[in-house]
Length: 216
Picture 1: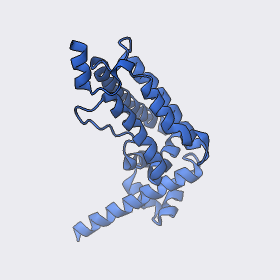
Picture 2: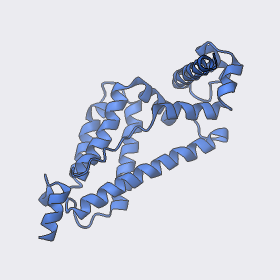
Picture 3: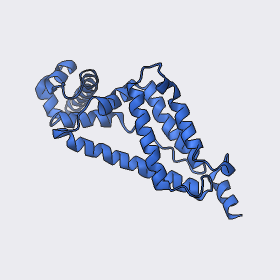
């Protein structure tokens, strides 16, 4: 019986999170009360408070339920610039194909004001951004070491530029019409951005091949 009760509680929590994401996306976070979420989920207000301290706690659950938009493939031996390109293109694919992902990021970037109780949420999002920048910096450093980029490239600065490009594309993509030029050209912008990072002498080289050429 206890096991069944625990399973039922988990199902209720999942339903609350899913309904909160839909209400946040439809009405905006500021205009959403926990009572409204409870009604949408078909549960009592007390049930919502049983699982979540407040609206900010529920918001974070919605975000965590979606997971990171960017999933870096750390396959060894692959060209790090190609991995970066796939890294960014996969994020656009998920936005296009996964409703849950699109709704969550619409809420985070367009339907929430990060003030008051949500100030800590903003800090958490910025920490995620910092982790994203660190991962890209490592890719650029690997590419530079392999001779795939211009020797003058500064990995830390290049990663900040890529982060700003990505953040701008992401926000514009979410706001753009489904068949608009931003969504149509997002992948092409990413490919061009990465291609312009590449040293023309190193096109097509893997990191190991680039490294051998550099040592030769």
